[in-house]
Image 1 (cartoon, rainbow, N blue to C red):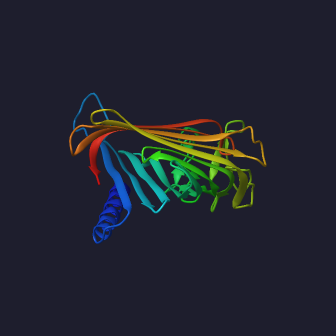
Image 2 (tube, helix red, strand yellow):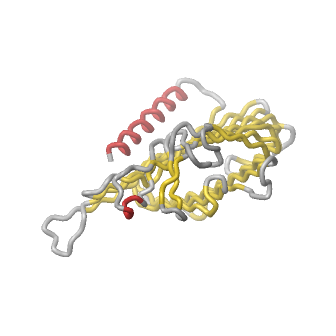
Image 3 (cartoon, rainbow, N blue to C red):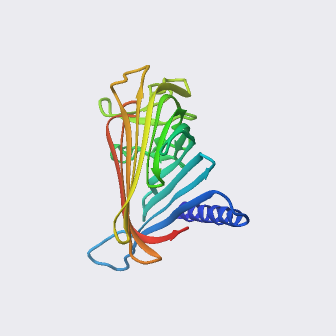
Length: 299
């Protein structure tokens, strides 16, 4: 809970500072965003049917800051989220952890098309653990991720089609992609029943003893936001990547759907579904889903 509250305070202060600076002068910047805090809590005292005291919380930020002037566009989206689940008598577990910044600089060549250069960075804030060891009877922590474990950086020139702030597509046919692994992480080997260290086996596509993997290929990123009805909107973000150098037929994709159902100016219901396929990280479809009612602030 402490980590979530500190993270929420950091995001709030950062946004308020940015808004204060923005209000000092008129500019061609357009900023929109939402910060949300979802919480679930249960407690028991002399409750005969049984139960464990528990708390779960999730704080998230979705922030757009876009610039437009004289045929130039500079679109930026920052996504940050952190969630924990704490059950009495057990270790606190991470339920959500994401940090991503996507930027596109474009120069208009027609009504909707721009020549562009994009940059994307994503990682996570804190260590995540594989809790398979709970069933193996081992009292060890096996971190499977952490800040820059892995970290992804992609960039390259291309073409940016933008009809509005709610509908766009960037195509970058010569993209450089770097996967960074700055420390040891583990993966559970179902065949052997033990945890393999990144120092011994290839992890996230990074070879043992190395800290980086380089890929070169095609990157496409699409964005679509639509109001389904009054007070209900859906945001869709899809990224696909094909590596020309190694198995171009194995296309990686990352799709995120954010559904926000506004109750009033303070409370909203939020549903996020993310699906990822990257055979360098895991040879199966990865799915993440969060749902809750909480406090939100639009700016």
